[in-house]
Length: 210
Image 1 (tube, rainbow, N blue to C red):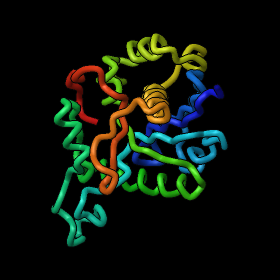
Image 2 (cartoon, rainbow, N blue to C red):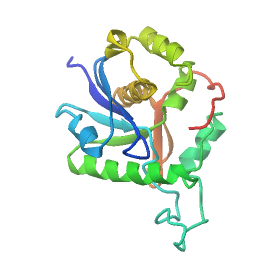
Image 3 (spheres, rainbow, N blue to C red):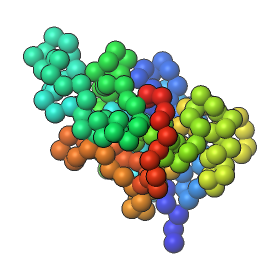
Image 4 (cartoon, one colour):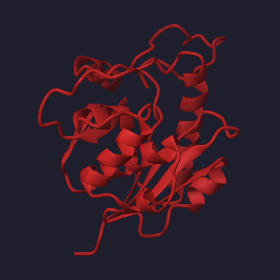
C-alpha cells in the first residue's frame, strides 16, 4: 500500500512566533519551524491526505465572531468538543480568552485557505493525543522526543535537534494518520466543530491546558 501522507501544524497565534510543521509520509517525518501562512500552505504537497491543525477551527454555537463589541460577545465560551475533552480529563483554555482569540481567528482563516486549495482539514490537540498515548507533553521535550521515536517516528526526529513546536506538529500528524486509518475519536459535533484525537484505550491522565 502507498504510505499515508499527512501534514501536522502546531499553529502559533501570531506570525511573529514560530509555527511547527510536520510532513509525514508513513512514519517518516520532515519538520521545520515557519512563520507565515504562505509557508504553511506551501508545505502541503499534492499527495497530502489530511491537514491536522493544533488551533480552534470553529466558534462556539451562538457566536458569529470573537469581537468584544459584537452583540454575540459573552454568549458562549466553550464548544461541545471542548467540554467533552474536559470530561475526559483533558483541560482546555476557552477560545474566547485573550491570546486564544488571535489563534482561533488565524486557525479559521488558514483552514478556509487550505480547503480552497483542495485539502481536507481537521482540528486536533497534541496535548490531548499525548495524554491518550501516555507520552510527556512538550514541557519535557527530551521525554516527548523519545516517546515519539518509540512510537516508530523516524526521519528528522533522529537527525537533528528539533523544537517543541516541531514535536507537537509530529503529534498532530500522528493524529491525522489515525483519522485517515479510521482509528480516531471525534469530540463534539460536525455542525459546531470537532476535535480529532486518537481512539483512547483507556481514560487519559490529566494534563495541563492547551
